[in-house]
Image (cartoon, rainbow, N blue to C red; front, side, top):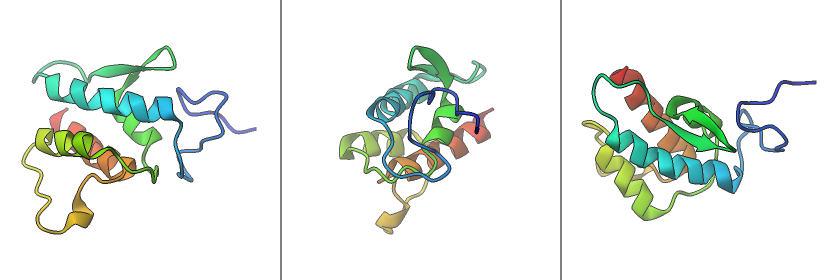
Length: 114
């Protein structure tokens, strides 16, 4: 028996293999964008609620690391605008178009901030 990821008890979604993540996990990530934007220097890493548990943004990013779902365009642009000096260039494959790409970009920014 394998141990479940935090916040994914009773879920068939496996972050290591990716695919379609549950809607509540994707919704929590969209809330995480706002929490990331509001995060002030010197404060602890923010958390958002996922299945009635506070979940740090970096943990949430790990849950979506291989999620192939497409992010809504407005949320994608909001995150891209919030990331510090993140250059996406003209190559649109570098944007936060999927939750996986967005999670990886946010996790990188969090790592640099802490």
